[in-house]
Image (cartoon, rainbow over all chains, first blue to last red; front, side, top):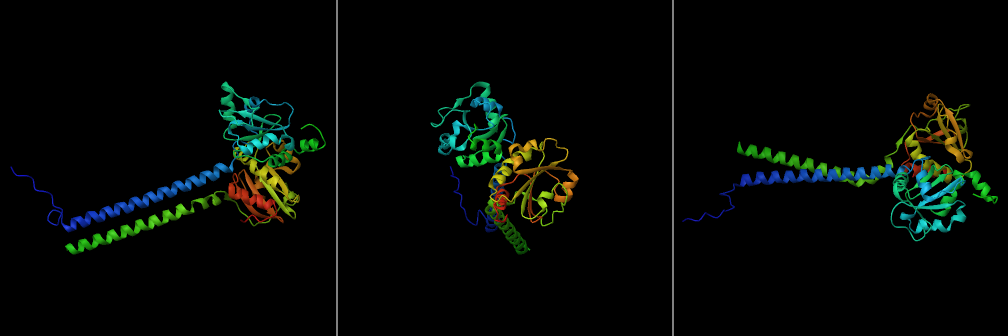
Length: 188
Length: 179
């Protein structure tokens, strides 16, 4: 019985020209793949940056958008012309500073928990439950805090954390009459 | 003959490699420039022309000093999404001489109520869309127009992206809209 001959990779089994042709074709294919991959990566990166710019250009809750469910979940105080509602389940140190600066800001601060994980600073957080939570979560979108007027309409919202002095400055723009009354000793 | 075929194949190979190399370099350049794209996202309208608004609805912006004109419509979603940028612009104005003017189409009956407490800082007015197009060369909302000494310095169309927002904030703080 004759054993099969071992394969020999040399000029007799693979002519030099064939080898060169296949090698060059492989090189071309890899060059095409590299350029395509880099191109797709560049397009994805461009789309990401453009999307990021457009996303950060708009406020999470549109101006005068209805946030009635959020206000109810937070335990709305009737009569306050301007109040700040903060998501307790996303609160960090910066948001927690608002809890202690309520008097300095001159507007009431209310906390709403639309998910698990309250911050320690938000011990007064109202816990929304049941179908109300879904509506409130939908209204709150991805905002972490929102300034609302007496009719529970969003005036200003942000995804990031604010500073108390920023809220004070916003209040002076959004409700200047109320600020003047507060300065004279009236109730906000 | 055989030699000619090999020569042609080598030429094609060289051209292919060169083409793919150029494509790769262009893609790499696009990759590196991607962050700078955000600076160019906001569409800019015409600028450099004088605001011919004597006696018209935009007369308040045509005088000396700086003015910012917000062109909006109460029922316009992008305008509502953009309001926080305009609120920040009003808040950032350190110079009390910067005038803010909000212009809505004349058919918008709730134009003034829309600004609520800000109406004391922002002069709210209405104008025929044709008049707006003629005076500001703007036909869409929202638009933010920066005016200095009666001349339009910048017109930003659509919600202000971060770069445009920075330019507006610089302008109302007394600086130049340029970076």
